[in-house]
Length: 585
Image 1: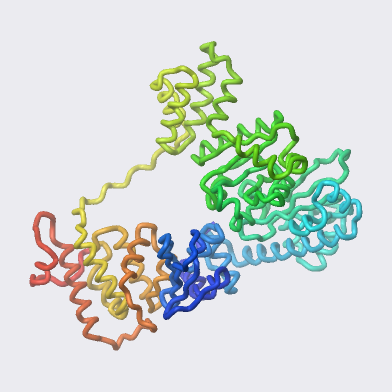
Image 2 (image 1 turned 60 degrees about the vertical axis):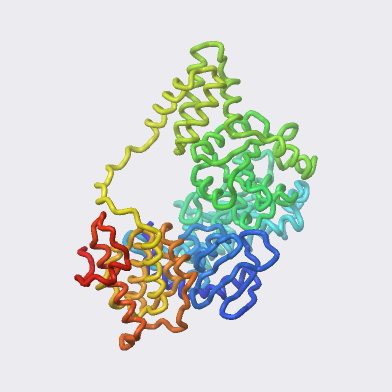
C-alpha cells in the first residue's frame, strides 16, 4: 500500500481543529488563550493538560505528553498513524490521496461501500435473532442472551441459502456484495455464506465491523462448529483480535498494564462481563506477530489464558514461542478443572479467573518446563535435542540482551556451560536473521555540538516562528545541514517546507511530518514562542525584527563553514566580516 500523500495528511490535520476534536473526548475549560483539562494519559486531580488553538498542539505539564491532533487520537484510541489519518479523514469528510502504489479512488470507494454493507448486515442479523426463538434460547442457556447479546451485537443468520444475498443485491452492487464475503456465487448463482448460525460481529481497532464469526446451533451437525468471514478486502484474521475495539477504554488494562489473550469469542465476552475488560482473542488461528504488535499499543505485557487440556497446552506453547520472538513481556495462565475460561467464569465467577491469573507463570519458564517434560535430560542425545529446540526459540528474539538472559536460564536448566548455549543460540539467530543491508558510506565527522550552539540555533528557530515571513528568504541563506543536530536540521527543513507549501507555520502541522528526533526540539522551541494570530504570507512586510533575524541566519550559515579547532564562539562570529551565503549543497 502506498504512502498517504503529504498534502493529504496536512489537509486532514487542517480540517480537524484540535480543540474541537479533543473536546469530543475531554471536557475542556477555556483559560486565556488555551483550553485546560485533566490529562487522559495519567491520573491527576488538578488539570495540567492544555490545548492551544493557535499552535494546534496539546501539552501536559504533568506527564510531558505533547503533540498534534493526530498524535492525540493515535494515543487515545491506540491506533497506528494510517488508521488515525483514516479516522480523522472520515470525520472531516476528506478524500485521502496516496503516492504511487497506493489504493485508487475506486479501491477506497469499494472499501467504504463494503463497510456500509457490513453495518447493514449486522442490523439484519440482530433483527433475525429477535425472530428466531431457538437461537435466543441457545444464547440464554449459555448466559449470552438478553442484555449481553445486545451489548456485543450477537445476531442470527437464518438457515436459508438466498435470503441475505437476494436482499443485498437489491441494495448494493455485485462488486460490493462480493467484497464483503457475506455472499458467494458459483455457476448456480448467489448464496449466503453464513446460514443457521449465531453471529458475532468482528471489529477492527477503529470499531468498524470488518467481518463476522458464526457458531452452529446444532451440536450434532457435521459442519465446522465455528467459522469466520473469509480473507478479503476487509477481513485479515492474522491482523485482528476479537475485542480489540474495547481495549482503549479498558479500566482493568489501566490497572494491570496487561492484555489477556484467550481462545474464543465466548471467553472474551464472559471475561468482559465479569469485569476483565482487557481480554481479546485470536480469530481461530494461532497467535501471530502482527497481533502482538497490535496488542503492544495498549499494554506492556500479555497473559495467555488457555485451556488446561492437551490442545490448550499446545496452543499455549505456540503462543509462548511467538511472544518470545516478539520480545514481549508474557505470562501463561492455564485454566484447570474447567473446560475453558468461559466455563470457569460461569462456574466460579470472577474470583475463579482471578485465582488463575494470580498463579500465572513467566512465559519462558513455562517453555522450559514443557521442553524438560518432553526430554529425558539425563540422556545426552535428548539434552542436546532440548538445547536445539530452545536455541531455535531464543534465536528468533531480536533483542541481544533477551537472548543472553534466556541463554543463561537454559544453561542452568539443562546443566550446560553458558558458552555452549551461547554458541547454539548465536548460530540459530544467524540463521533466522535477515542479511544485513550494506552499510551506507559513513558521513564526514562533525564536531559534537555545544549546549550554547544548540541554544542559539533554537533561538533562531523561535524567532522564525514569531516572524514567519522571514522563511521566504531563510532557505536561500542557510541550508538545514548548517544546524548542529539531526533533530534541529529536520525541524528547520519542515519549517521551510510548510511555508513554501502552505504559506503558514502551524506547530501542529509540523508534527505530522517530523521524525522522532525532531519532536522534542519543536517542543523546546515552543516553550518561549509567542505566535502571531495570523501567519499568512505577506511578502511586503520587512520589519526591523525580520531584518535582525536575517542577520542571525547569515551568522548561523557562516558558523557552519568554520572547521573544528578554531576555538571561535558565536559572539566572535558576529564580529567577523565574511561571506554571507549558505553552505554548498
